[in-house]
Image 1 (cartoon, rainbow, N blue to C red):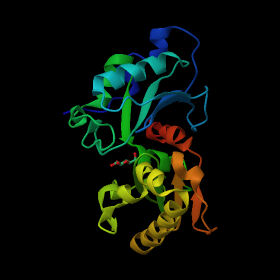
Image 2 (cartoon, protein in one colour):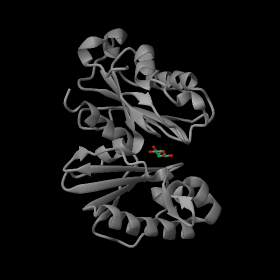
Image 3 (tube, protein in one colour):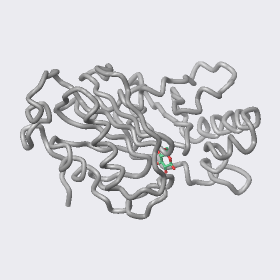
Length: 253
Ligand code: BGC
């Protein structure tokens, strides 16, 4: 079984580079259904470099995505360790589902080990929405994140700690369709922003009844299309949380 590793176990990328070292620097990667994004962040999630991005080659095998991620990493400054947000269910670095990446090879793929082998430093992988929430939450009470992008991501937190992964995307929402079928990017393009906004509002009502959250954060690339009525318990967050949240994966060493 794959294990997450500590800094001490593997050579650090900056040691391999021998170049200008930055302290507490983390290569933050966000694997999306539309874009592969990366930057280097500090221990508080602050960006130490401009984000680099390429289109996600949907249907490409995992090893090809790993190669592209390595190319992105080589455009960035040195780092000690790596955080990855992945658009599916992840357990101990191993991918369990990957609904929007279009390749069966993801199932059972040990992404943490694959990236560690290519980039030579420790890797932690988490579901993308769970990770994005870590970059957005206030740390009190029951907090929820939803991400509106290619897919529909969800995460839940209690007093700042991430809870069991919520995979609402593929659960029934309304009219015989799942949350993702109703709220994902394909649906938004199909029905237009106005109707899509009405659906998002209905989802918020439903999630409030289901989870009685204190705060709901909405992120993802399509959050920019939202025109919701203001509500004290709903906040739209910057998509940069999808990278900056990666700092929390290394907060306890
Ligand atoms: C996946 C989730 C993911 C979400 C956003 C869904 O299709 O099942 O795990 O968080 O897309 O990327």
